[in-house]
Image (tube, rainbow, N blue to C red; front, side, top):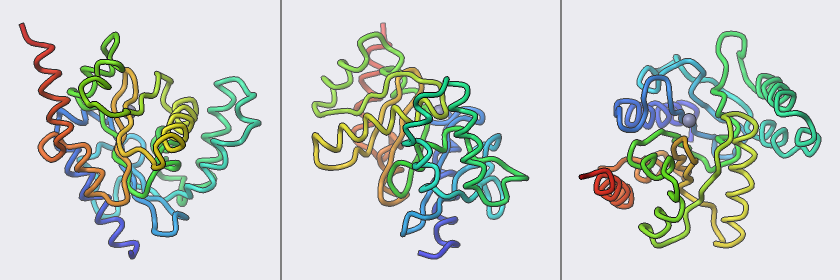
Length: 223
Ligand SMILES: [Zn+2]
């Protein structure tokens, strides 16, 4: 796939979720698409709304391999949270092209680790579970299959490391990487080989499972 095609894919998925208040509120949520060889990643820039992305604006190119290396660097795990975040930010900046004008999203770490197309949103129907006491079990009961549940961590280095650990455990147990990842008290991540698959796992109108999430959440919220 050419760079132009990848950027078109990024703009398309960003527009689809960015226009839905039930999925992305304010500047929340972010999207990315990687090159076929996994050496380059285009990701929403920090401080830009998903709905504002357009050709040549609102996204930035980074090197996901350098970021993944930093996240898995044992030395960082021995630092204080603040110092680890600082070093992660510096290494992310170093992996970014034209980093002087825009910065990648603070959540870019988990984008780097995951599949080719990543859509991270704050869907209200998923957060009905992710913010609920006992939500992990309730969600597992409803879905009837394993759900990757990542306990809360502040966005940035700490959250990306937790996502990495939980996804590795899921993959070991299930023989494949997860498509949907629930972030406690935060939202969800959909990671897939294509933008359309990541969207299918995210949009309630397209993903059957999400309709189920939504209907159960509404049922629980009812009188
Ligand atoms: Zn988020």
